[in-house]
Image (tube, rainbow, N blue to C red):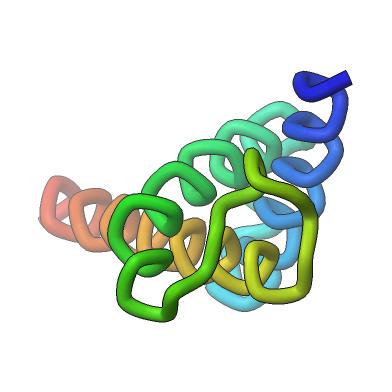
Length: 88
């Protein structure tokens, strides 16, 4: 059951983050899921302790969703930075 929640939440988080960052036209559903899951990991390790929030593993809550979303946005910002740097 946990993997299904990770896939669904990862897809949702990745899709919302890609809409916020303006990269939704470049990503498909698989990349949205990957961005969401990796973003949840980043958010859980970096942002979660700062905000005192748990990760998606500890249960789905508004705060864990926000932490995952922030992590996904950070990931997309880093990827965007390196893509711009390599194209120049």
